[in-house]
Image (cartoon, rainbow, N blue to C red; front, top):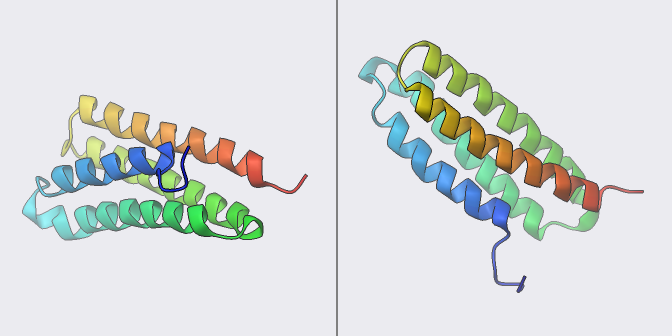
Length: 117
């Protein structure tokens, strides 16, 4: 991978951000602020953590990646709640979880590669 080429985790996260923004804009008006804004912000925070980790010193990366894992879990919970309220379909929940799982696997591999031995 070239230095200017973003890592695959970044590409998946960007896709998830776009997808999330499309879904949250369709939430009921009464819930856009509560759930929509929270989902949007957490998803954007996850993307920004990936960017920070990409350019951080090696010693700083493990903490950033652990923070990313926590954000991913929070997103899983919010998407499940959104589905339980029937604001997204089962198929949309499956897609969100698949994206979050893929980012989580990549994050775990990245964490193993930078963790002190």
